[in-house]
Amino acid sequence: MSAFDRKLRRAASKKMAKEIKKNLDNILSQQIEERMKSFRKIPEECLSCSTPFDKTSREQAFSWMMQINEETDMYNLYCPDCYENTTAGGTEDE
Image (cartoon, rainbow, N blue to C red; front, side):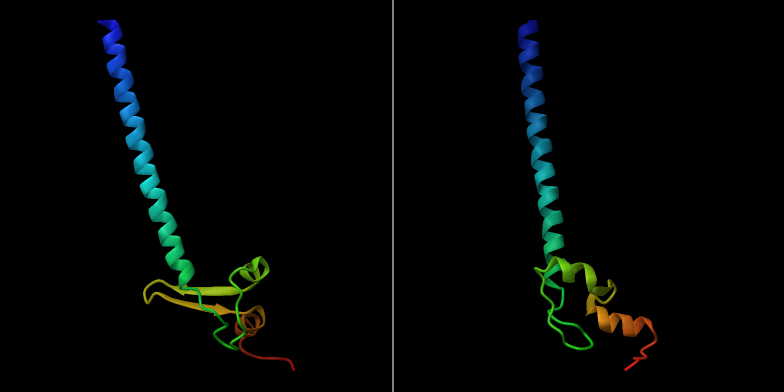
């Protein structure tokens, strides 16, 4: 009987592992889909000066600023110059 019990335990263990893996895959795919939806909402250009934004550029991804309003689901993108002018009170030294 012990060999049969061990066989049943192994089968139950394999079934549980398979279900856990399936649930984990579903959760991960949902998270990826949510992030892709957010990525699609990123504007193509600066809100103030209309400078084009390259979504594939790592440099621009870290230097440009984005304001996200979750209540209205609005994404505002600012280039470094416009963001600096905005945070400085809107005054330019030209």
